[in-house]
Length: 438
Image (cartoon, rainbow, N blue to C red; front, side, top):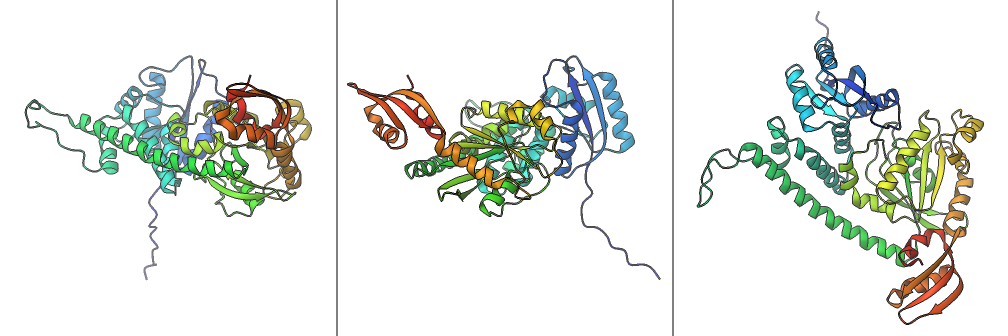
C-alpha cells in the first residue's frame, strides 16, 4: 500500500555564495569576517540560503570584475559545484562589474551587491504606503545607472509595458527612434520624478504635524541605533506599544510614534526610526528623507547600542557617521547600552570605550534599568541647559518669547531691528537658536 506523500508548497530558497573583500584603500569599521557575518544575516533575512563564501584581500578593486581574475575562476567553479543561483558581493558594484561578472560566471547566475540586497529586504518589509514609496524610489535610483538589457524585465514589472523598438512617426521624429534601453531609462526617470512628487506631499504633511507639536511644546525623542539593537523592544517596554519585534535585521522599517509619560507626569513623544547599518545605501538615506526628518527634528536622541555584540563599538561609530551625514550629530544624545541581561564585563566596557562611560545600562527585554533611563531622559530634556548669546530679529517674536518662557535670561538689549539676549536655554531647544547665535 503506497504511503501518502505530503508535498511542500513553499518554493525552494535561492542558493547564494557570499563574496567578501578587504581593500587596503578602504577604512571599514567592521573586519571582513564581521562584515561577511552581517551579510549572511542579511541574506537569511532576504530568504536566501547561503551555501558558500569566497574572500580576497586586495590593494584596490579590479576595475572590471572587482575581484582578481583568478578569484573569478574560483568563484565560477564554486557556483557550478554548489549549484548556486547567485553570488552576493559585500560591496557596492558599478555597472561594469555587473556586466563583466555576469558574462564570466555560468549562464543564469545572478550577481547582487550589498546595496541591492538591502534594498530587496526593505521592499519585503515596508508595510505603509509611505514606506513603499520610499523603497520604490531608492530601487529606481539604484537601478537607473545599472540598467542594461538584462534589467528590462524589472522595468516592465514595476512600470507597465516598456514600449516598442522601431521608427517613430511625425515631423522631425523619423529615423530609428528610441532603442528599448532608452525607453526603459526614460520610464525610470518618469517613475523617479513621480515618486519624488508623492514623497514631497508626505514631507509637507509631516512638516505640518511637526509645527503643531512645536506649538504644543511637546518634546520629541527619536530612538536611533544599529539594526537589531533592540529599539522596538525598548519602545514596547516604555510605552506598552505593540511594535513587531523579531531577532533579524530590519525587522521593522516604518517609524512608530507613541506618547511616553515620564515619572514626574510630563508627557513626551517617542518615535522608533529605521535601524542603521554600515555601508547604508545612500539611495535609502535620500529616499527616507521624510522619515529621517523625525531624527533631525528631535529634541533628544536615544542611541540604542547592543552591548552584547562583539562589534558594538564599530556599530556605534557607524550610527554616528550616518547622523553626521543627515546633519543630526549636534542634537543632544543619550547613549543606551541594551541587552545588559547578557554577560557583559563592565570593567572591559569602561576600559576600552570611554564614550560609553556615561551611558545608561538597560535590558529592554527584562526591564532592567528602566527607572534610571526615565530619570536620565528627564534630565536631558528638562534639566540640562546650555549658555548662548543670540541676536533675534523682531519678526521671530515667537523665538524671543520662547527664550523668556523656557530659558534663563541674564541680559537683554533691545536694538532697532533685533533683540540681543544672553542666557541659558534647555539643551533640547539649542538648535532652534543656533541660526541667531552671536
